[in-house]
Length: 164
Length: 370
Image (cartoon, rainbow over all chains, first blue to last red; front, side, top):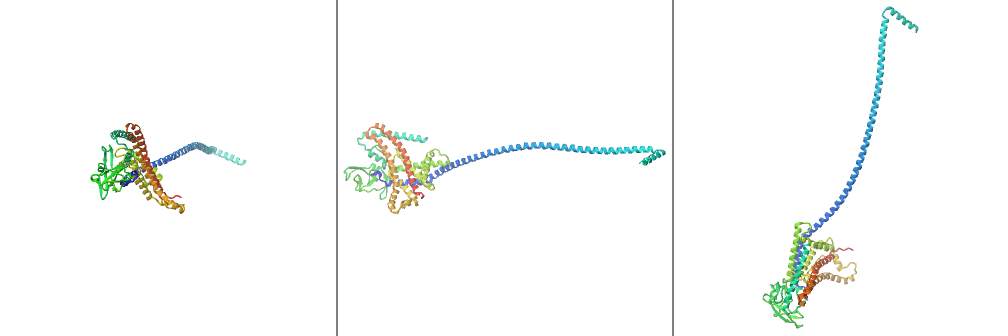
């Protein structure tokens, strides 16, 4: 039957056209199309991967930020607490120092006062002695202003010595 | 969106042509009292021809006469009109004693005769028949540009035009999301690459075969669709011609055989783990298997496409058998339905041919894994 008998002419032309088509399409058409399409597919895959990676990174970053914030807060609290303590301590120290200084000043004042007093007493004593001496001199001069008086004194002194 | 639109347009065109041709032809057959031979008409339409018949009956027919190219003691080319408008001749069959008509060539075709679109060199200025076949005459090598060859050329040009358009889009725009024609064809290209080649062939080797598979897919698909277009340059039953499917099947066979590795041949000639006496039986079976696979490819495509054409033609013929245009009310919707189905078949057969080709190649390049 004609329908299932292959025809040489048609086989020849089909073969020729098919081979030409295969050659031309492979060389000039499939290559650029497939290159573009596959490059795009690769690009999309890469972009998706990158997005996923970025998301993970973002999440990590966020977690780190939170930790950092927490740490910072804790540190701030610690610092504030320290500062308060320091301030209190400083005030205390200052108070103590002031008290100590005041005591010291009072002590030294006392010492000075005592010294001055002693000095004053000593001087007073000296002056009293000097005055006494002057008085005594004056008295003695009065006593010794005449021969009789000199004689009377000498006798009196002699009488005192005899008494001893 | 525009694809749906164009499909719609295609169908309205198809319907229009069917209705047009029925009214046209019914008027024609009423003026002639000749009995309408459905089988002959259908066979004529699904077979190859040296003319492209446009419309009209025997005497007032309008055709495009295609060039005849013969190699018979040198190259001879002339128009096929020298046969169609040649000298009608009648011969009596030696066995069945039936009268058989054929056409003797005139002018440059003198000395040749045409019977059922086959060209013979006449002996003693005539053809003799035995059992309905030409007897005693040699057939010169016929490389004519027949209806199918012209359709083949047109299909090839169409493929090149469509695909170069797609190629230019990518060349111009680089790796972007596709627009226009590329949007529709990329789906098919990716289908062949990812769902056919990559799925069936080893993932390190499939790339080499993608161009072949793509070419075979688009060749079959575009020519299948072209065969469904009822007017010139469509309508030739190219992919339903055994010569074409034979060539495509042989192409796949050759690709398979030349890519076959040790493992593939090993499974044919020395099936691992089989004792040698069994191999005596197994080797012929495996060898037959090598050829039955492409043979099935050839027959499947041929039978499916030819059957589709025959069904559409038979449904349209209902009108002519009944000699009444009102039968178009039944015949046209049915033909339309089958034509729609044929659109699916056109894709399906192209897909199957490519898929099975990939499967055979995949089996040939598969590495041993025991």
